[in-house]
Length: 240
Ligand code: FES
Image (cartoon, rainbow, N blue to C red):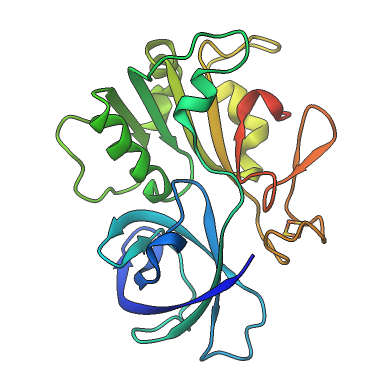
């Protein structure tokens, strides 16, 4: 996979979760919802590890990243970018799993169990374009959201799961063990609808190479690597 050049056009401060940036880059490099770019600052040679950049909002000639970027990323900073990497959200694919009828999502529940809902916001636009109803479960502050979207605290997610025909989650890997309880599911109880989860590990040192194992997420069969086999997984594939 090749590298492309990019540049930080503007830095914004998200009061709840840190810095975000408008990044200028080729259209083909803009990551779809849930996938990411590995980004190196060319002006910070002391930071050899790449930073993952996730889509929050597409723009002309680039995109707004999700938080949180390092303080060394400043306006005008030149970037080296690789990607898009990993697997992203795919509402159509999971709706058409083997044994199920392929159909459009009609009632989408989005749940952000991290400080920010930013990585889920591109799905919101996609679902509204398809005419789906959307409920967003989030405890943190939100940017301007279309009034058609209903917003609830994450404590009401169990009820939302009974309403939804598709669930998209964003959560730190550390919150997987408590997920069943949050969803109101008893031990061994099946999910009532298809669900995908963006599971973010504490770190991704080799970022997409799959060589270090640091990003391993517990799965039904062993582990899965968030950097290359995720970070978006069908939830039934994981151990939670
Ligand atoms: S970050 Fe090294 S295997 Fe995923």
